[in-house]
Image 1: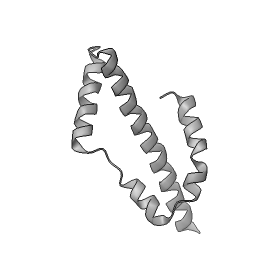
Image 2: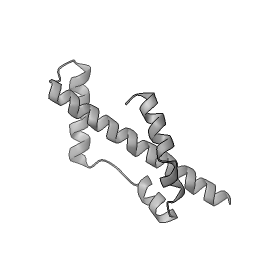
Image 3: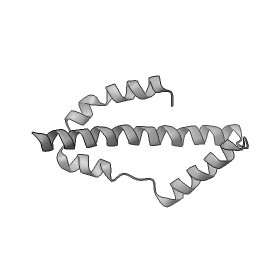
Image 4: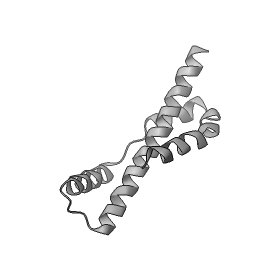
Length: 88
C-alpha cells in the first residue's frame, strides 16, 4: 500500500479511533493473523522476493499486505488512545 493510501486511511479512521471504548482499543491491540494466514503470507512474501508469483498470487499478496497495513493503523490508533486516556 502506498504511503498516500496509508495517510488517507490514517486520517479517515480518526473518527473511529476517537469513539473507541477502552475495551475495544485493547481488543484491537490483540488482533493477529491466525497461523494459516501468517503461513500463507510468509509463503507469498518469499515467492514474491524470488519473483515467482503469478498475477493472481501477486494480487493476493498485495491484499494481505494491505490488510496488515490496515491492522497496523488501527493498532497504532488504539495504542495512542490508551496512552492518551491513561495520561488524562
